[in-house]
Length: 218
Image 1 (cartoon, rainbow, N blue to C red):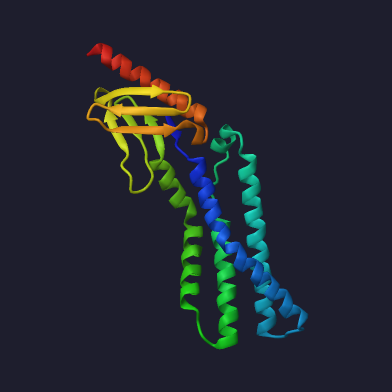
Image 2 (image 1 turned 120 degrees about the vertical axis):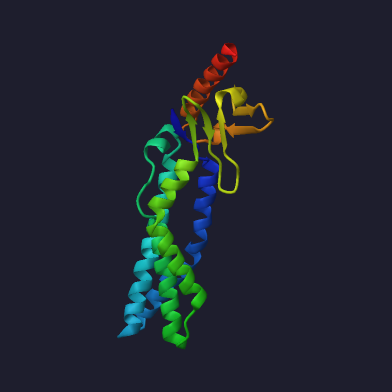
């Protein structure tokens, strides 16, 4: 039995972090329209069109992301509607930063290297999003196997991998599920914060039965 461990709080925090790029997008959108009203020609016109297009695409994508997050009140729906494609928010944010850097270069003949570097980084992250997401979700799972139990953790935190005879107890309460190993290590899962908490509860219940069975056999 394998179920994902996805924190609703963590997903909301990641979405909020992306909102910091909306300010530059709105400013860039206004700048693009102002340039168009000035009846510019040549490169200035193309920069303005690029500014408007990238800003509108980012704003629309962010709006869609917020709408999708709001619709995911049902935890089961969140489990079955996971996004596995490229991250358009990062890609369109990279486009907004590229438009900003292009405008700055056209006006000053100087390259904003930090902005360009950030744009390239976000573009790469956006394109590699499926691989990054797959790896993260493979790590962030609860697995109840024949040999034992695996409880994934966030990066830079230790996961739990133990055989059944190494597990002291598994307790499933109204809010928390707690796994305790015989060496004293504990892992507490906030079930209210997890997408698809009913699936997590079912997996913990199955693991609990295995621990009881192994305890009786020994």
